[in-house]
Length: 313
Image (cartoon, rainbow, N blue to C red; front, top):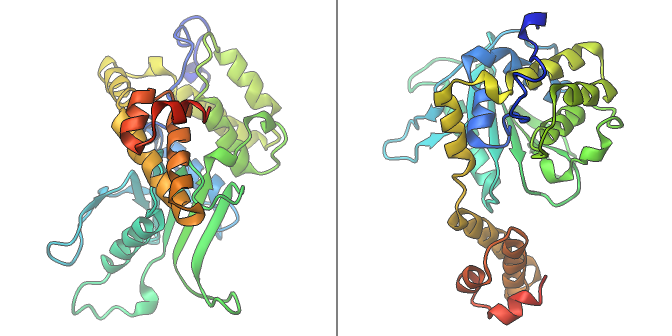
């Protein structure tokens, strides 16, 4: 990152804000565009530091629409999809809304990508099929185990022995990231997630200097700190064209009550399976209430009276 690329206080940061990386536009802009390819490479290397044999230094972005080999099968569009020169693919997803069938979706994506490497009649050996890494950032707890990073492979349930490396799913549970621990994490991937959460802070007047000071306190190598600074610089809203800014604004305010209600309903259904239907409905109402949804809308979504809902706060 050159000195000229650094934001100037009082100009670039005059809006006092950066892209929210957990919006659809913000995430794809930072980690799914050719001009920010270096951010994608750095992201993968940090998240998969312990899983990669060596850091990757080049990627090729692939079409994000997955075309199934079976006619009339469901088509899918993912957030970020790329591959390295050795053919290993990296699928990166950002999920803001709760979805009960998250793992089913991720497995479907992975199987689609794996089957895409071998055409009918192909003499390629099964041992030559390339691996798929899936990284899913979720703004809810899929496992509800309090762990930031969870990993999934195909293994023998008795012995734990991995029987295939083709599918390797990693979930990063953002609610488990404590932004107060920005200087204490000790793990590069946790520090990166803390920084990304810091970038969602809507406090007015946050400056480039304050971000720099925050990065300086993080216990990571100088190389990682330079990456963090580059990420912040490229996330400055004033670096975007007016068209990009408008698109970002449109995405930022695109979450409707219907989306929130559906997400809460899904989470409530899951809770209901575990704790009983009545408790699940109360969890739905409580979740909606915490997100500022009106009593009337919550009542329509859950069937509870407004009086019952008000007592949940």
